Length: 98
Image (cartoon, helix red, strand yellow):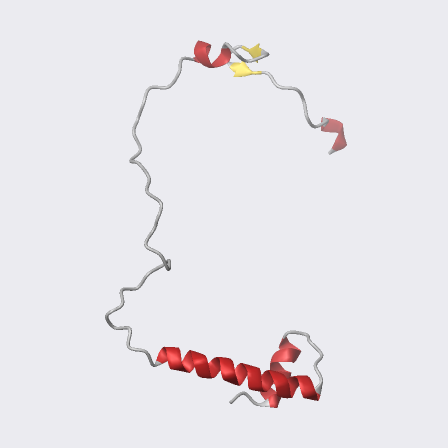
């Protein structure tokens, strides 16, 4: 059972001010929770495979494949403004404002 003193210590660590009545209440609540956890710890799960998710679904990714990229002219043909082989974009930050 979690004592009231332990509840006060936990409350102090959490920077919470609690009354004596609240400490008594939380002592009972936490003790009840730990009793349930103890029951779970007593279960035989030796034949249960460890898992990272409750369900068996996981992301399926395709293998990376090297593919030819577009030619530079093809990439730049729809750009509103270019400078040689680069996109030209508006300035979004003034150098003097640093």
